[in-house]
Length: 332
Ligand code: HEC
Ligand code: HEC
Image (cartoon, rainbow, N blue to C red; front, side, top):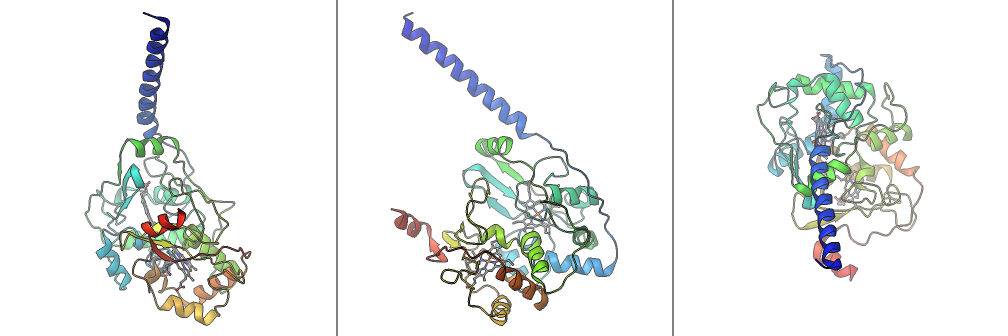
């Protein structure tokens, strides 16, 4: 064998070994489990707590926007029906496969009947699932107060069980690799409050916006594969493909009070509330307007007051609804 052929052979062996090790690592780390404390949360049968949980689950907290089975089911929620949260909604994770929402009714085999209150609370607060896996960060409820977390779990426990088996994760090799090496549990920022009392202040609005309604998660530019924030908070520009009208792309408007480019800088409090009461006006919109429209006037006032306190950021959003082709043409 010539010198070159030998080098080639060894390079081949080294490369093949790296690939084998990588594949093995993906399968090992894909099943990686994490630790996090179990929050001291216990569901109650108190009717005020259950009512609060229901208000959040079908309203600003929008659990029902994801934990139902299909777009048709979502339309029922949008029409005001409190249908069971038996899961199955499918999200396509780009080229990585699919993730479906689990059944969160109390069914003991297919739902959360088999999970303790503390396991559910840990999943929502620390992003560590009942089986120790890192949860994909779809649910930014890490800083939900103890009281609201208790209210939501109490509501879930009060519901009739529905038997519905869901295969939550359906990842291909790339999805498994991303899961193995890039998905880490996301937990709370700073200290979590025991209770946050509702009022119309910007402070309570901040809690609703950041910890419950996830306005920042959509109205800030992000890296679509990792979910990392890439733009200034609330300055909009995040492009998302519509789950309701496939092929359509929604681009979030700038919610900061910038005098030129802020979308709502000139809206009065009354206009803001009226806009929420109207529900979805764009069919393809990813914003769960029809759940948010059930929020009380006081909650909407608090949100409005908080948005007024944001730092103005100049960021002109050309078009709120567009298509893939149009975006590609604009880029070239
Ligand atoms: C944007 C969509 C979305 C919203 C909103 C949402 N969820 Fe989820 N939820 C998911 C997805 C996706 C998973 C599966 C995550 C995974 O396996 O990585 C999940 C998983 C869960 C789990 C399972 C945890 C475990 O240990 O297996 C629970 C419980 C849960 N969600 C409760 C809720 C509650 C309560 C709300 C409302 C306060 C909510 N979810 C809102 C998408 C959502
Ligand atoms: C799941 C993503 C998502 C979430 C969460 C979300 N938005 Fe939006 N929002 C959008 C998209 C997409 C649009 C553009 C389409 C539309 O107007 O419906 C939009 C539009 C808006 C508009 C402009 C409406 C108009 O008619 O001009 C306002 C105001 C707004 N959002 C405020 C909020 C506030 C406040 C919150 C939190 C309470 C919030 N959004 C949460 C995605 C989201």
